[in-house]
Image (cartoon, one colour):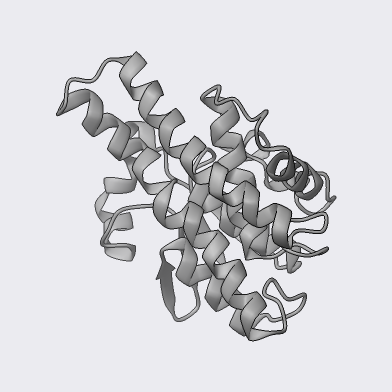
Length: 212
């Protein structure tokens, strides 16, 4: 099966998928779309992904969109190594940790929302920075408790899970926007441990072919 990942080097959602692909040892081709110039709105990509967002994972029989769906598909089709715990309670906890970032933090801090704040709400950069800090800090405050409760080196347990796939890109975003991570030592330690894995290091934004 040939896999082609459509993304953008600084997209946190695309990075989640790169991490999962790397942890599972799957090879794929990279197709880049520069969000800054609207390349994701070109007709060819819109035909592949009508929402015109990244990522999209193209395979022999069509494309999958939305990173949570892509990650769940990868887990079902390529179950080894697993990124979900073996027990139902553990799987629910990991999915909840992932959704905390994927539903409540990342979407309201992505590029199109920040641009809407600037262009439609006339927010200045100080206000935009305050918005970013507020939502990352609120989410991380809850997640830090969950990592302390369930983590054992990684966000959940002692091996990487889907929660870590979400966590590392969000830490990168927090650092990019100068959010104070001092109150979140468990989160930072889990993210740093994941980033240090040999399979994961090449997935970082700065290592992507379109990084600039």
